[in-house]
Image (cartoon, rainbow, N blue to C red; front, side):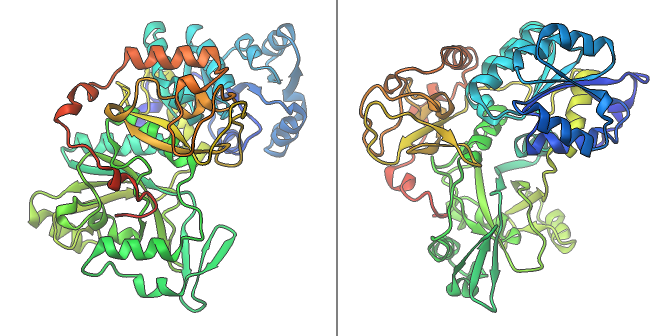
Length: 484
């Protein structure tokens, strides 16, 4: 990408930002990178543990006297007048600072929505890092941004923005996109010498995987065998489904199956795997968004949670030339994969902040629509009174399995997963049932209003065409753990 436009014109204007969830991992990467960009400056930082946040900022190179812990509106305004960075516990105090754009990174659906709404209605831009917020309230926030003349954007450095940008690039070039997606967060690293496979800090025996490093003549059978070999490792992180919901909203690409395919795949195989079924791949139809588990050997480069598009090749001579240069082209020459093997978190986010503030440009997705819904199915029988707690690294919801539904397959009363989070069940919900709004005794009222109004304002139009679409059968949705 060419980012020269971010620095001209605009003179030497400094872009100031507010940051919520400022003590988190993503926030640290942004704050560290900001130190290297003279035209970018933090103004107000919000985190519940402001003392720990202050210590982190000093560790990053800030002088202690640059920082001021503020507990009320007057102290935030005074910090602003004194040229200090205000550190606050209460997100409602962010508005008292002088800044251009909010980076929302709490991961909290209700709190994140409240802060984003406050920013937009006050005429300030928002870069949304909290995919949990976006999956419920993103359409409404986009409407608010339009109403108030602001930019509401995903943030570069997170997979959704990076993938949306890659799709925009591919569409600009006229490439015929069949599938888009990302790799799961952690690679599967096979050590043939020990017959084990490691994912992050977990190692399990998988001796049969060494014989499955090639797709062979029946790719789907190979993918099934690989999935069985690594069945002891978790597949299908809630965060992956949430990120792909955000991507679907901005691109119109939708899930091929509600639990996604999650093939265990090597990078060089992506063009063969994300082909249509009649060509030996996993796709029932073009236009899919999906996630794969990257399989590699020790010492091989990681996909690093990167993003990809798979396209139909068109002219065979062009793509055979590109195959010769090392690009990923399917064995039959019909498909090719283009990918970015990285997402650098907050290290990349300054590009979004500068673009939004200096040029009123989002990172991508200028017309978000309700193309897919992040919902949830009960994993076990859930009795009335169960509190659907949200927690863990991937913000899982207690007793609930994430699913990504095409808009035309989504019941009108389906509850988005992160509206259900923290709510209490009003009735018993049997295992396998889709959570609905009627199941929830006390959903957050503001989030519920944002969900219903946003979905009504920005429908995709696919639902009206569903009668003409070929439905995915129950058997096709019944095998989410592999690429079949």
